[in-house]
Image (cartoon, rainbow, N blue to C red; front, side):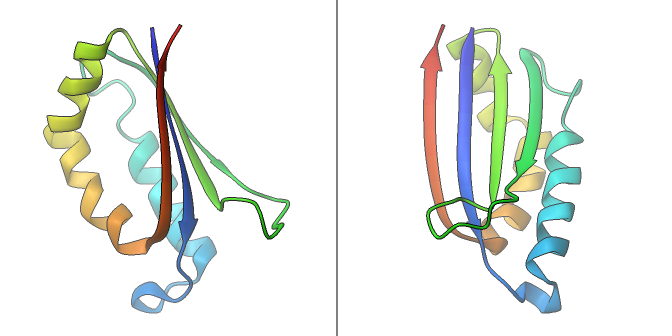
Length: 100
């Protein structure tokens, strides 16, 4: 199994939305991919409540059947449809992929 984790810092005021509104929309879009991409076992979005200077604003946690399934996800139309919005609201992104 592959675990794919991203941490994001979100911009305030993108297209007139608050940070919270952008996060809520991103969460709905990302979690909407559940069950639509072969090999994607699970995807969830967590929203930070600590608001510390060191924290990210949003985390994406996903599980895939294999490395090949992660590659399918990267090129899948459902994933590609979400990317423009996500890219428009983030100021920072960190990623880790690992196998268990």
